[in-house]
Image 1 (cartoon, rainbow, N blue to C red):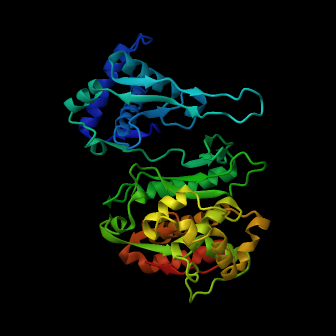
Image 2: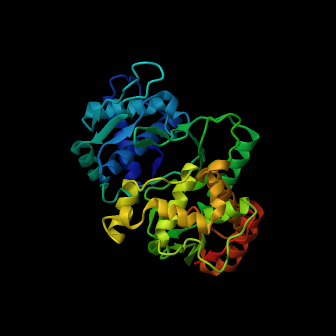
Image 3: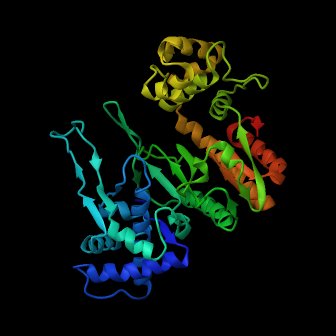
Length: 420
């Protein structure tokens, strides 16, 4: 539960006002009504909470929403810990939600690997809450017409490295960081872009501002140079749409075009080694190995900072439907590695230089962000990004291509090949 939604329709706002009153009256620990700014913030907490709860009903895997209740996890949240707990207390009293208490299987001895996971407290809305919302015309089907995500006030995110327990990877958690001149400059750039795009109409997709997510936090003397991709704050976001659907969007009243950087990470890697890919050849086209398998192996190797050594379940589920059930036999990973390294001997330095996808993501994100800011500052031209591509109005294609080439050459050391 991100708790960053707001009511944007009259029905949504009216529902939040009425629910706030009912929840306050039902709260066994509340003696007085809230007024002024405190009431507005509480209504915002109600709007965010009910939106996240109802959104949970639409998820495929589980209709339970979850939220860690530790006060420290609310420091960069739109909703305060005190208000969220008060909303939950009132909702429980009204029969609006069911909940499951969270837990953590702690190691038996210091230094032991945990034998379980952190399980945050789970919440699920009841039919009582859904019926109350329907009185105002708000349903799970039309929820996004009445509530949208707010532009993030704190768009800079730092995450811990991923953890591995057995064969399971646990994503890194968001962590707090000290405000410095570097973090202020990073936030100012994202804030400038978010403020500009908030006034631009997008039809056919949803955009609720960007957050820039950096990885590998808590390293000694962290330099803010790991990761850094711009991720849309919306749910669902235009970034999650299939490419063909993104191509149907209307940006600022005009049809769009999406400009892709060919082999972005591989090109950046080559440039960092003072090398250049052959512009006349597809770098992922190698002998009898399908292009997407070559690309998968290279990107997975970048991701771990070492050569990818086995075709795991992820690989089999992704490629088996396309190439048959016995992909391990048809494309032995040792043979794929031999062919790729024969075509790209520069990749031999992956293990020695310890370069990972986070290093490549950082340079890529700097070039993409620089391109978007250049388009905004010099041309008042709106743009959206999907990691290594940008979406612009078709009439802005020429200036966008020029800005991409300029920023990739300046930041990454090569002039990219751009396709649409």
